[in-house]
Length: 88
Image 1 (tube, rainbow, N blue to C red):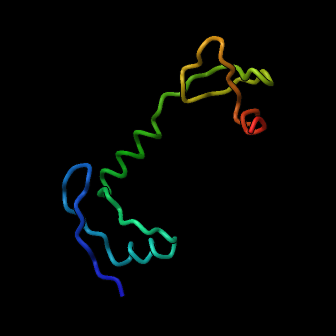
Image 2 (cartoon, helix red, strand yellow):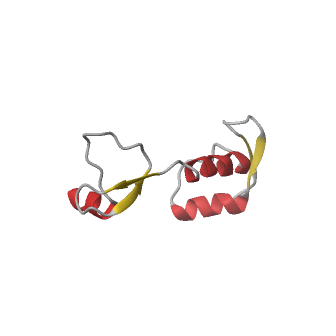
């Protein structure tokens, strides 16, 4: 049903294979777009996100120590995950 396809990575320009098995997986998950990056570039992109600098601060709502992915600015409230979810 599916056949291997050769695609070009939009990040590095290398050709990579979108295998029949990967295509079947994408179809099962309901994904409509083909991958645009090769495995190496996808992994590098994930690692950049995973290594994002975190800042320790105190929640303005409950007073618990928490970590946030941005540098807190004086005069602006910062909330822990739970308090932030309750604000929504």
